[in-house]
Length: 266
Image (cartoon, rainbow, N blue to C red):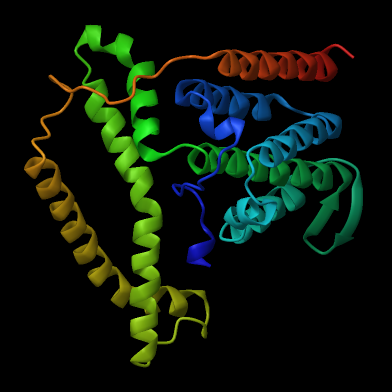
């Protein structure tokens, strides 16, 4: 299941989405997440889901590969759905003792689950179509105005990108440690929730040791390449907005305007 997490991974392809400027992709993803929280009707969720599906197809990323990111959060999806299903007030549909399910609770559970799914998929699409270097450059460029107030934008962008990039690395390391522990007799699949949580304690110590070792190796590698932060740093490829980026931004703006019109004015 750990290998199913796609957040932080990059899927190489030659699509329009991959070639787009990272700044436009970061801004679009941020705005897209805000729009998802503004959607209230099933018509709006259907439009957002259709737009997300079209984006996945255009990006040349297999749909199965993209949806893999939902597998590890299946428990969270069920938990969110259950909380909204059993706590919402409204017209009763089923009652048995203290259990009470309402029509409004069913609708709310479905909407909250859809919202969480769309948020995870949209965030995964950003990292799947953008390399860590371009993601760092895009974040730094977007935060460039904050330099005037003394904020170390380059260092912040670098830390965010490294943290994001290390997600799949640490997950892979966790998977290796769990397999090594299982080969020595450790059991991670049986027992109640508390017992299964306790069985993961022996995994944490070598995982932290491995994480600190990798961090030290990364720092040594950066120092050996004379990395000194943003001061005096140059780039082999400068970010430039193209006509394609403008078309992508206009297409997204039109979609958002149309969605808001359907949600609030129709």
